[in-house]
Image (tube, rainbow, N blue to C red):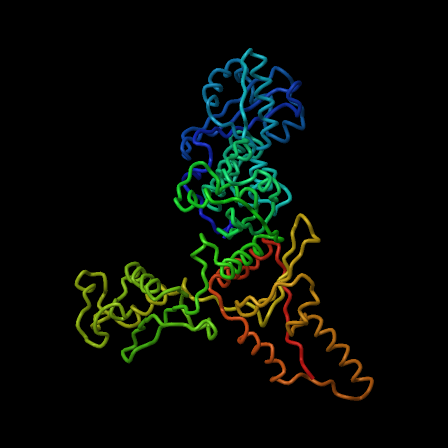
Length: 532
């Protein structure tokens, strides 16, 4: 879920993982050297406890000429600075707004150096430990090569009116932090900020060298106790920061606090991207059953919502067991780990769409024509006793189920999913997937033959070559029989059962072509190898 940023709504407040009190600041200057050039505009956003409490902007008369290229870049002309205060005039006001708060800036070294020099010129000593939003971006989004503000604005589709203006740019950093608050946990953000501000905290049993070896890359990590017992398996796009997030001094989760006291060793396994990390984490938790990973334990049965039309034309819903080996995804609404979870979802949909509990198999007799209890509370419009027409009721029922339709497999057959690290193109893994079932992880492309597959385009090339040879020889090229093509499919059903967690991961990365591309994945159609 971490990189589906195009789908994430903008939260009202920032994550509590950010410093409690901070000011996001941006400067526009006459050039790039703080010793020689001057500030011409300052804009800042003041944050307290995650809430934006103040914005402030001021032009500043630099008492020097503004180079033409700066005027073109910023849109700030000498005319706009006529009557503007000198830095000395606003220094005290500015100091009151930033002192005692964590200073945040995009490329913080630049803005901080200009502030220090301007304050020094008016006899004010200003020292801070700034938080750089460029480094913040690099730490949490290592899959991207560039982290300039323009790239972040484009990446997150942020709306800005005046690029390279101080307050507008500061507000873009704030919105970037908002987006990050929706994508990452409080602990992950806190660990990132602490690492950048050089305030790490480690469990007492853990050797610091274990943490130093952790990569700033995607993968899976493992926590062990002193005796070598596996405590926890996790994943992240930035292993080091995610591991550090577990060691935050502010433990809001009792489980994390208890686990931290036992951690004596950390190991890791790199993956090319977040996709491989999620797949690997899910399979390792099911296979190894770590002490503190309970939510992803393997389940043999799932539950679904089934719909049928009764003799009166009304849609009736019920919860049924699904054998994972026989999952027919196109006939289902929702997949759940327990009957109770499925029933709770039905109850929530009934409340939201004013559906009838009797027709949803949630109340009493399903055959009587008496009004249901909810009809007396005006939470059911009377479908249970014919007061509401089946057309109207069914329309609402279908609307309620729409978002819970199990996704149809978007390809004609099995696929080879190429996962390549954008920062190291030699780091590549191939995944064989068919109808939401994860078949295999391959290090070499040619290993697909061991699973009874070949690339569809390769088969097409062979078919074209065979056709040409047949024409020269005056014979007809042979085609594989239907039973031959079904061999691999039968093997898939026998060896690779449907897994709910894997399904959710695959849906997140594959249902939208743009998401697939954003996550750096390539899809290659596969076909079964015809046996003679």
